[in-house]
Length: 218
Image 1 (spheres, rainbow, N blue to C red):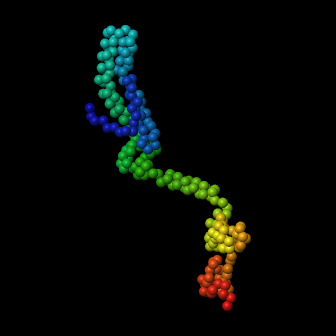
Image 2: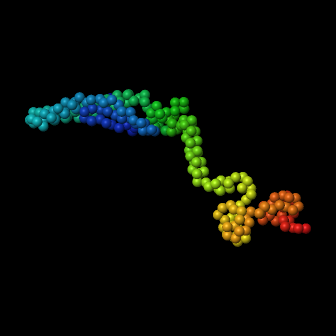
């Protein structure tokens, strides 16, 4: 008999009464079960076993003969049944030339690329999944963000600046605020250059527009 090609993506469901196999996709685990192929000698031997239990003697000897006949032919019939089973599912599976996985054609094969969908996913499916994932991430991010935090993310707030501590008493400020909750000092003071009128950052010593010293009354 010729060599039998086989893989590890199947389950052997055969018994002494017949042969049946279950082939499984390496990617999605979808299974295809082949039709049951009866083992005729197994049925004959079973009948002899029953007769042996009832009568003994000649029937007992006949049962031993039947067992030997069954064991001698079971492997041969099993191989033939396996070849027929692989023929049944031949059109349902294909091997990926890149990763060598056996996958089902219906769900896990990218026909246009000639590869399995692990090696060459459907781009439309991946794009939709990526978009959904990003949407979910944004929903979670915004649901955890307080209104005050959203306000701080606005460009105007970034440009305006924020302080971590009160400039008067040094207490830590947990959020952006106009007045210190500890001493009442004004936190964000808008300062303008007396010479050119440019808006100045808090703590600036010289105007970045004209160079005038801040606080210089001369």
